[in-house]
Length: 288
Image (spheres, rainbow, N blue to C red):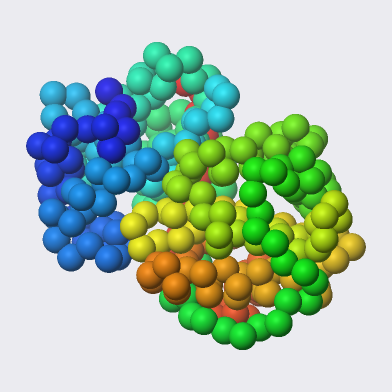
């Protein structure tokens, strides 16, 4: 059964925190401010973005996002690596009971063959970039404002225009709005409205950088998009710089961004502003 970590009993969270801490790479990447299992347990108790998968005992910690009938698992930490196949099968069964029709899962490349035998397809390589936020005095090129739900209709149209020719995941404005609403509602981690910025003056916003709290001490750029007519002007660079200023003041020590490996434009931008590639993963999908 899948249960939000913040609603799980303390003894369950402590067991989860113990095996998460033992997976040192996972805990270092997702809970960098936690130095022991007790701190991870407290972090999970206050987080809305992590879920515990349990049978008779907790078997995995996952980050699960659901949009209508589609589920996406972007992080998974199993209690026992050898039980990953059984864990994925249990997840699939639970999602079926939740009326989910399909789901994607993002795992390290070494697990591709396992997922392939379980009927997963559409291998899409992803990479994660990260850096330590620093304060800067970069001057905005255009006026900047915090991106909130009040601007959702304008941001949705902007996002659709930005991706119309390159990403068919957003075939219309409504699809873009659903994605942004998911981010701003906090289901992908608390939305950091004070660190999320849009460039331009209402109603003419032309670029946006939206951040969530991925884990305690870790901010994530959940969306970064610019209208095609305003690209290559430094707007995204400025938005990221100003966002980092807010993260530093909030005590958030790491900023990450996931991208498809094939996105060379984004890779060049991030490399230019001192982001480093720190993880590789493959996203695969299956019917439930």
